[in-house]
Image (cartoon, rainbow, N blue to C red):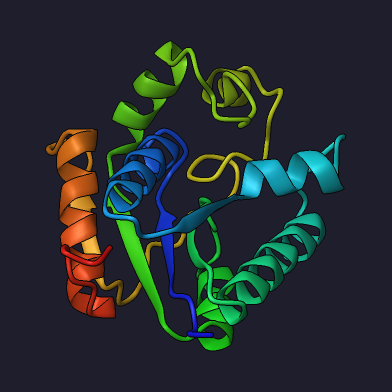
Length: 188
């Protein structure tokens, strides 16, 4: 059995991670390349249904995310992590634990993320209206507002999701995955 690869889509809430992860999964599937999306919101909903988003809880949840992704890749399953990972160390822990690994940064200004989040219908299991609740003082742990979002120091790919469409980001990410993990498009 071969080792699976892992790509972590990181960026502020509302930067397009979940949408792009789903598009990437479809593109991979169309080429008969199997992958699994591992969503922090899915893990959080199962492990901490009444999430506090404290630093302590985040360390535990992100540890579970990295462990899950490692178990999958160790068993030959390719993984797309859909998670803000507001602390750089969460993503670096994954890089150390999961070879081969790549970090994909969806760069997007906070104001655009706020606007997208306010108007989206499908939250992909993420809590709804987080920026509005943060503005009202009801959510103090929103990355980029109440807690820091530490941009990646050396990601394999950076995409400006305020300039590129979700489709363009997914295509660019797919091409980067092909180069990084030596995937041929004619693989069936």
